[in-house]
Length: 116
Image (cartoon, rainbow, N blue to C red):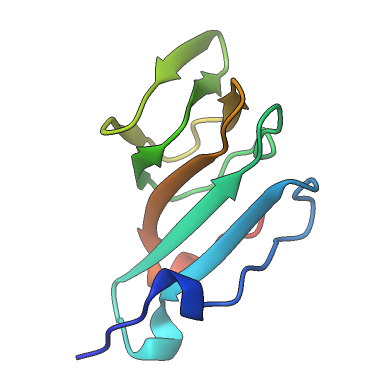
């Protein structure tokens, strides 16, 4: 078993990620997780993750903040406690709105580490 605290994991970014978006790789294949990676994203007010797509699905749980998930042709609001399913090849981004950051958990397949 592995337990990591959020504050003990150094934040990083992916290539193409704008200033104001950080990710903490909480549990990954490097920890021995064979199937899924659990990441925590922090998105500052007025900033969004890149509008992108990938071949794998992922699931997101909103911890704090409000904003919208933008996909091709729609913008759907989210709030703390919401869960979001992004299908494979669905172009998307998460936009932080208001005066507080958005923090969310994102789960992806371990073998498909995100590269935005």
